[in-house]
Image 1 (cartoon, protein in one colour):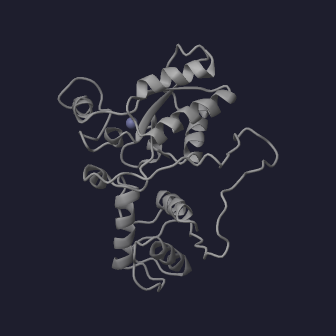
Image 2 (cartoon, protein in one colour; image 1 turned 180 degrees about the horizontal axis):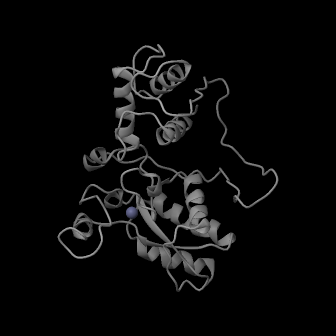
Length: 257
Ligand SMILES: [Zn+2]
């Protein structure tokens, strides 16, 4: 199957998604195709009724639970999510095995600005990718329109490639302040320079945590929680760990830091 046919087949299935998501789906297929990985999508836009039907699966209807989201609780309901699977070159098979090729597709999607359901803590959704523009479901339900775009200038080379690859980075304003983020886990009671770094970064992206005092107290816990509510709705625990780190990094980057 040619890449054009694969793209057409996939775009037919995803329905009325946001135009940027549609472009993203196409870009994922084309980039993966070049590496001999064949991607299709099983789901894109889902109405509230379709979502409720899916929610019933494994609960009031037979089958395994496939989602924790009811109508209006999934990014699919706002045309901001896609579910992918792998196929063969003929576009005839379907595989949901999370192998190296699967992870490569995830990498491609992330490099375009998508987030991956496989990174969620409470319910891992391996086929699911989404782009929310930082909006919460509540904001979307209230009618706020997402401002999203594809990061097509950022190229991430495949992992199998050896040697140093040239990575074209988006231009950033060098005059702006930088916010290095600590690694590891910081929680209520943590102290030190790491906490200061985190507090500076949270303040920079307007999740205000008060004075940068290097003490992770209630105000900072609250700021982490507010940040997670918006960007990591599946892991709102007020603890700064790898996922919050990654997300905060992405948000800083999106703000030009
Ligand atoms: Zn999904």
